[in-house]
Length: 378
Image (cartoon, rainbow, N blue to C red; front, side, top):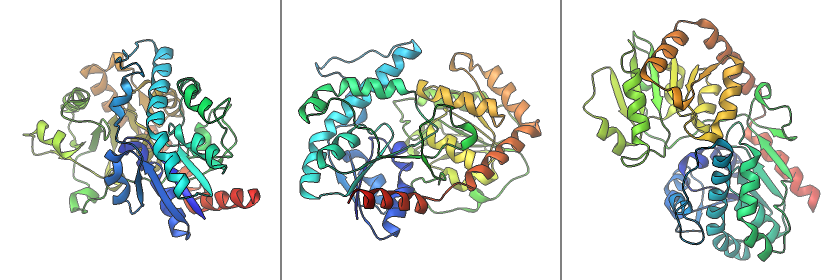
């Protein structure tokens, strides 16, 4: 069976779908992963054949089709619409490359990560089933609706009157945190993945002090969102703890010099997670799910609005605390971290959630669900 995976334009969204793609290859299927040129190293580094379908980068989609840069709204609902239209424009920039690909390499099924809105269009064009895979605990549906509105010209071009619905939805959200109105799904255990690097002893060895990790995601650069990361580091730096700062090397270099109890650089989160007592981060999907799967309490500061909903759910469960970005003062962040480190219930709830994740079907079982879907359509 030929399975075409359609990914987005940043490493973060690719990390979420790599384990399913690897499981499909291990099951003997032919797998391609289509994505923009700039993320090909992330895909091929995971052992997945990558097919570049666009020279655009995600920031290009911040400019509308008239060539005008779209201002970022402050209102939360309007920000969802902004996000959806941005992802829609990005999907449109990938569509020609995807259509050319399926004309040459006919897939039997298309699998798209959530927010990869070109996937349902190319599946409809190829006349094959479309599988949607969640890459976090769920985004507001307003984003999907706004993306569909942005993709109106492409839908009309393909003779479609609406965004095609998924024939199968693979969800990685633990059942205890799924919204009441969540769509029926094939559940799948979240398997953490990050760009590999050699394992060093400090990664899997605990010290004498509590270990705290800070992250603002893989998209941080010296010129973009650096203030978010450096601000978090400054706010938690007064804790009596060993501090790990997960960041691309170019960003880590800008933070140096650092005290002896602080490490900064590209840190595979899943390797250090079992040694961490607390993680403070931007509430990105992979970081959140990775530390959920290892039972580590989290301080979530959702600087990206689409992360707010699941941050609230995780906080209400008792495995995390959410801090509104408008209230992320050093005093508030420091106090929250200290309270969580001193309160055993956060660790207990986080471990209960990790046990739930561990009991979910493995990616190999999700591949079997895809096989049944395709077989049923033959």
